[in-house]
Each structure stands twice: as structure tokens, then as C-alpha cells.
View 1: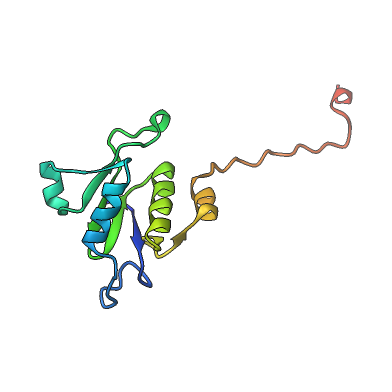
View 2: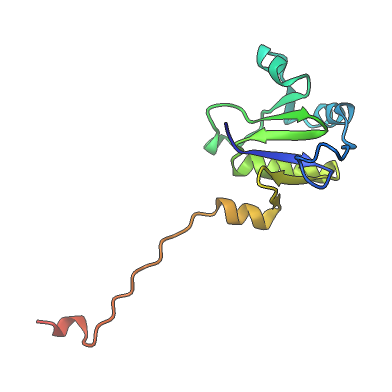
Length: 138
């Protein structure tokens, strides 16, 4: 199991009662127009359906062991455990499709959220306070 992000046009990704107006044909058209994306024709694609594609232009210096993928499912485009460059690509896709990016916990992603999620948290430095300068302790 992993954490997924979803490119959606509805109120939230889990709402099955609200119809999505994003279609598989629209997704195919987008993928065919984006030279960085390529439909996966392997057996793995069969598990996810015909809307599965790989992102071939993931930055090489931080390239994961596998190529990130996007899968069309029930009117949404999903990615499992995306890293920072993949989330940025999802924002780019969402912008072109007039959609938004939402996580499994219903949070919405934008540049500010990416900074919050992926920026390293530096530990606070411990402040040493003394009543005398350090050279006068001896």
C-alpha cells in the first residue's frame, strides 16, 4: 500500500457519487501530445488498464529505481508515492487539463504545499547561554 495523489476535477477524489468529467479519450490526447509521457504496453499496464503511462523525463540526478507512472482510473489520474519532481509534473498536467491535485488525505497540492511537504526540516540549534565569556570559565 502507498500514498497516492490524484489529478481530479471533482470536489474530492473519493466521491464516487459525483461524476468526473475527465475522460480516457482526453487523457489519451494529453499523453500523445506530451513527449515526456508514453503509454505502457506491457503486462503491468493490463493490471491498471489502458490509461497507464510512464514519465520518461524524470530528472536523472534523483531518478527513482523505476520510472514514475500515471494511471487513468474512474475519471482521475493517479500516481503512487510520487517524489517532488513527479508532483511538479502532476501540477503541470493538472494545469493543462484544468484540474487540481489532491492527496489521499484530501489535501490539495500547489507550489506552497510542495515546499511544505518536501523541504527538509532542519533541527533547531541549541543555544548555549552563559553568564561569562567562555574563556573565563578556567
